[in-house]
Image 1 (cartoon, rainbow, N blue to C red):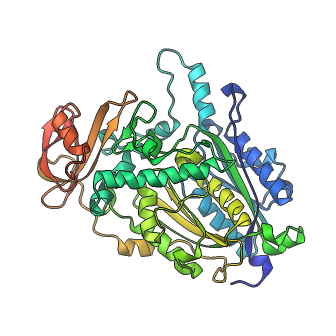
Image 2 (cartoon, one colour; image 1 turned 180 degrees about the vertical axis):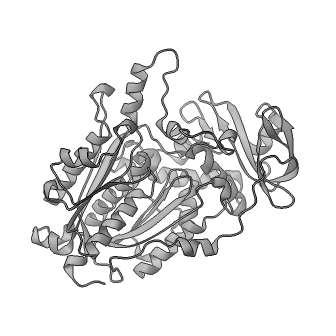
Image 3 (cartoon, rainbow, N blue to C red; image 1 turned 90 degrees about the horizontal axis):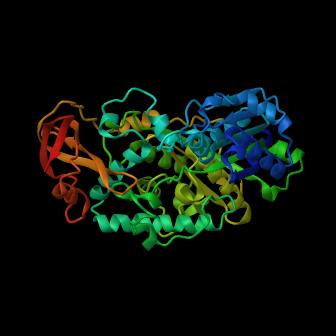
Length: 498
């Protein structure tokens, strides 16, 4: 461990806020949420925001027209930080990366006081859009809008546009790879999610504070409609929130100069990051992620720890497949809470800023009990991974600055990526799949990711008007992954026939 207190990073203040206006026109926008969260963090730390050396912002989508918020936010909090930047994109790993970068700057002696913050007012943005809309369609989905700003590509033409469309591919592939029945896989998801709801119920910063039983999560009805097979509403991230969260990182020496009590200091450990290919169709597989594995195992090694050292964890939880994969790599038991905030369904899913809330909650948890916590962040389309460790006590192995980029190592582990064929017809087998449902709970489309006899990859539409095919893919009687079938020409492209 670095022994110079000027080079040891600690979190000294945290803050998070929920905004629930009766009238969306009276609600805070994303910038307002960031200001409110930082004000709370400054009060928690007893450190004036005007004195920060560095300000890092998590990119937001709810008020996209605001553009870069660096100067407006600095002005709003009365600060003139020498380092002031916003993340290039709103990915779920961003808060952990920004924390790691702040720790590096402190370790390098470049800054003494750094603030990280994000905010999303998706509920307010949707409410304002609905008030301004004309005609019958008053729906507004900022997540899907952000995902479809570009010209549709091959995957998007098959319905794979937003995260909720893609993560079920991993869920179905992992279930088959782990040899689970549909019933067993859904039970594991429901048990983990129910524990998230219990954590959220006890967390003042969570959006939904009502425990939900596993049976309630498994029951598909008008309040828990199907979204994308096998996920229902209570299994997916809840982005209809107005939430902001931020935290302040200082050098240990600076914290002591400010008279902050030792028991309120949370030490920052080392982190590791790696990514999957940006295109989901350029992945080697959907039942495992080498970048996830690398980021988790490397973080353990860098900090000289095992899973037994952690009293609590935050395993990113936009959709069940992510914490299910992560806990298997980490070795975290399924019957222990995998969140300190409450997960993206119940704690809230403010797009890229969820892990800021997790960091806030981890700091609060460690101040109250335990010694060490593990944070795993995931972003994009199961693309970005970044882990880090926090501790109430110094982390002996921690040294900053550090290189947290382990992409080369992840690439060395990656299997061969199948060649993509966009106009294939003929025999094939199911690599993975999903069915998409409308708001009326009826199936509206579906997609099969298929492998040709030569191992190439292609996509095929599912005819949701074929009850036998729908039953084959969704009733759990047989495992569809690995089944043989045919890719055939249809009017709008290529379809799957069992």
